[in-house]
Length: 366
Image (cartoon, rainbow, N blue to C red; front, side, top):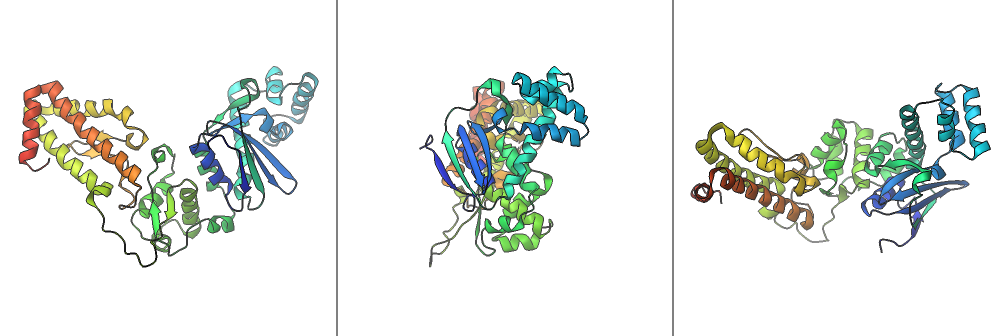
């Protein structure tokens, strides 16, 4: 149940994977993490992390501002005294005293909060429990943080190689690269996008590590990020079972090739009939369509030769994608071609719509 409480151990579900599940399930409530005599409380609202006063180490924040030489010790002491005297947060106290203007204050606050979360990425032992419920009220929160960005930031700074190794598939296990709906939303660094593209071309982690230019440690860290984000997994065939032949309709690369064959054929017809404005006619149709296609297609664009450019992630998986993702890609490609045909009707008239379809049929594109 979406609203049910749950608990577990970090040895079985590491912190970034726990964040991922709360985000993708859009959970709201309180997460408590425990390790020996340490305890941390975090709050979520529909999957986003709430920067709440109840989660903030206020004394630690003032100390950090002093160490960064943002505040002098006497200024931090004044803010702490005012906060205690009037029951204010140290953030409001610093503002009341005019010690910092709002923009740098909020930037420093968010940076401090996030950096204190990074230590949780390395916790191997301890437990957690999640209690669903409303997030803290507006008056006790400072903002919301996107969890998918936080997961990547936290894993990039991890130093616990043993923990990373424990949660990767075996070196010779076949791997599965999926294309979740949120993949285009991830702010991947260039080296992470390189790793993701390489994963789509290798059969196992051993092969990936041997070919990766990142070096073993950074390669494993990128793999761990993909594993925690549900992009990478092991795909183990049953004993004695031979891999099934790949159906052309289940391969996004072949699907894209088929779409481009049709799109180029259509583009040539419109260029012949309408001249240079063909690019504008079809490009605008795709721009208008893009918002309704969802995150998988937000890199959609019409290339000068009439081919369709899509996010590279749609080409990953080598036929190992889930049936649901395949259906979404196929529907998207169908909608793209339909939008182009309708653009012909709108700009050139119904006769040309029928003519372009006949032309594609004669060329074997339909």
